[in-house]
Image (tube, rainbow, N blue to C red; front, side):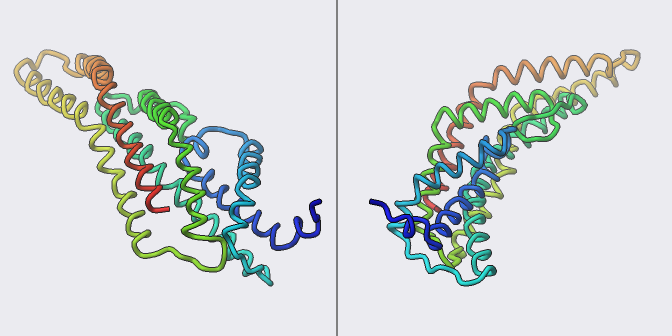
Length: 259
């Protein structure tokens, strides 16, 4: 028989709260979970269900000293939320870089005014940016990267167990900063092929306007750049998808190693 007094003891309740808080931090920053308009009730119940599954495993491997004050409990929960948030944040950097890169050549195409609500990020962005964002999300889910995030959360309880010890080593902080700095590298890698062609097109149109002043280059360049940009987007769709798949594997591998 189960002893309910032991099962619902103060220590077990606090441990469950800590696991739930770490998962809440993941859902607050991880791609798909934090960006799509998923109802809060669904996120809460999903986090509670996963916390219920992880509870006996974490309880077996963790020797949690029950805090004797509210500030001590707050410190533990803050630490747990920060760990989960860091894992999701590192995974979301890739999507921020992809959106940045697509926005660069979307502006060069002349689609900066074509703004619509992007359900993947919660803000306004060009429609072509939304298309590439959804492509990245499908690749992310198709590779099972969301499962690796939960695996990273599970492993993090071994590397950084629940308790007062705030083990954010300098190496971990340095690696998180390095991952964050890659947002510009990803953005340039995504934007450069199409942006470069459109930039050369602008230069050629500038020479044309000098050679033929009577020609209204603005009326010609706007539809030409949109058509050329969409054509290049279709041509580079497959190489970009392969590049995003490689990026996803690299980011997940780094996250699982760090946490």
